[in-house]
Image 1 (cartoon, one colour):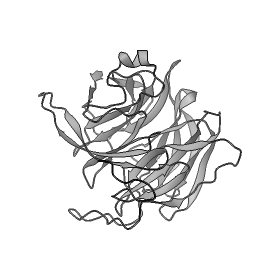
Image 2 (cartoon, one colour):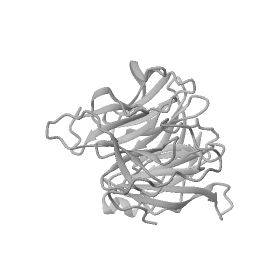
Image 3 (spheres, rainbow, N blue to C red):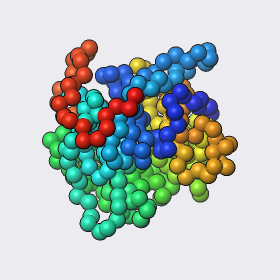
Length: 325
C-alpha cells in the first residue's frame, strides 16, 4: 500500500524533528533541533476539501541550545532533551536544568537527539557527536525523580524509539547502521535485553524517527529516501508513505483519534540545487494511512492536570528568550 503526504502551513525548519501529540492539550509538539526551537500547533481543517488536517502554528519557544526532542510533563509544561542536559521547560519558555547524564570528557562535542517517553512515563533520550564520531553517543533513561541511567553506549546517531502495544518491545535505530533493532523491554525496571535486527535499509537510506500503531506495525522515517516505511510486527514491509522531501526525519500519530500521521522533514544536508526540486523540504507533512497510533505517555513527574485546568504557571524565569510568536 502507498500513500502520498501533503505539506502543512508552518514555515520550513532547518532540522524539523521529534513530533509528539500532547493528548491533554490536544496539540502537536515538534522541534527544530539546530535552531533550538520548540513549536506547538493545533490540527485544523484544510480548505482544499481533501479531508486531511493542516497544522496551525500556535507558539514557538526559543531555547539557548540545540533541542533534540521534547515531551509533555504530566505536571504541566515540557521536558526537553537539549544540549547534553535534561531541562524542565515552562509554558512561557523558562527553563531550568533537571538532570545531566554522564558524558565522556574526551573533547568530543555532543548533543541530544531523539527522545520519547516509555509506557511508564520515563524519558529515553540518546546523544550523538556533532562531527558524527562513530560510537560517541549513548542512550539514556531519565526517571521521574531525576535519576539518569545509561542504557546503551557506542551509539553513533541515536534515533527511533517506540514500544510495542504491550510495552514489551523497544524499537531503536542507530541510523548509520541502516537498521532498526528491537529489544526486549522490561517495563518494571526500564531495562533492555536481547537486541536483534528488525528491519534493514539500503545504501544512502538511514532510519530516523519512528512510531508504532495499535496493530504493532512500525512506521519508520527514512532519511535520504523521501519516505516513511511501515513494517509488520514480524519486520515484513507493509506500506510506504511518499514524502516530497528526501530528508524525512521523524513521524508521529496525532489528532483526537490518533489516525493522522504527522511527518517532519529537514533542509539540512541538501544543496541549493536539490532544494529547488524540493520546495517544501523542512515542512511538516500529513496523511491518513488507515492506521491508529499508540498514545505516547507524558513524562510522569506528577499527576496529570484535570481536564480543562489552566496551564501550569511560569515560576521559572527563562535564562533565554521565551515565546517568539
